[in-house]
Image 1 (tube, helix red, strand yellow):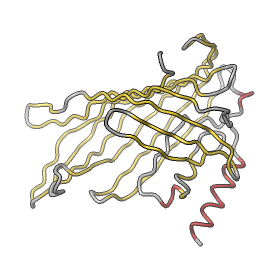
Image 2 (cartoon, rainbow, N blue to C red; image 1 turned 90 degrees about the vertical axis):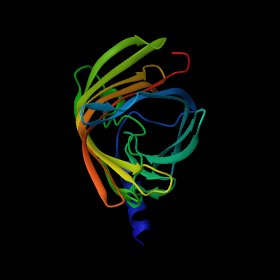
Image 3 (cartoon, helix red, strand yellow; image 1 turned 180 degrees about the horizontal axis):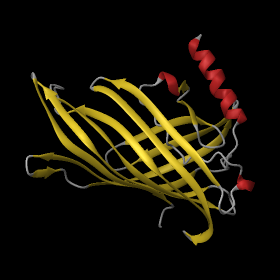
Amino acid sequence: MRAVVLALIAASILTAATGPYRPTAEPVEYVSQNDFVLWFVQGADTLGDPVSTRSRETLHVREADGGLEVAVDMVDEEFSSSHVYGIDASGRVGSVDGSPVDEIATPRVDVLPRVPVAWAELSPGTTWEDVVTRSGEEPFGSTAYTARRSYRVVGEEDAFGTRALLLVATGSVQLRQGGFQDPAQAVRWWQEVEGPVLDSVWFDVETRSLLANATHMDLAGTAGFEGGGDAITLPSGLRSSVRRVPPGS
């Protein structure tokens, strides 16, 4: 019964919201680039090497009962994933693979930049505030993610070979994540960090579809390693740059 009630609530939210997202006739393909450094300070040494991943991402926004759904397929050299997200027209996620987000431990809630403003109102100088948050429990411990952003419409510009509408956002991110350090899961690690985030979003003026977006964050805080009765806490941080752009850009 609880799942049915949550699904109905999610459906009502999807129906009521405004925003730029609408069904696309064909899937839209992007190249997703993620460059990050997960660092730890031990004694006088800073540990952590830069990591760069590149994947092919395909998004298809379709009509669904009570709103929209976006099918997201990601493929790179080492993994592939496929999920369907129930969204409203602003990009707010209400379900993942048919399950309400409230019933999922750590759902992805930032699939698309969230724009709760109708397309006709996206004029230079328009501003709004947005908060994305989730929390849950995994075998290694608790997780949490909160992003607070202040958006502003900059205006139109030539970008990625077409005419684009540019939006920018500044704000902050608080993140708790973790995992297991070894295959036997005898040592677990966790990280709690926070810091500034900067976003840029481009929409194609002609098609009104998401053209590209980028997120940059520089987070700092603490991390811990626990296992075998021992525990240590270290200064830690995450510097990350994630970009979704058209192929060939």
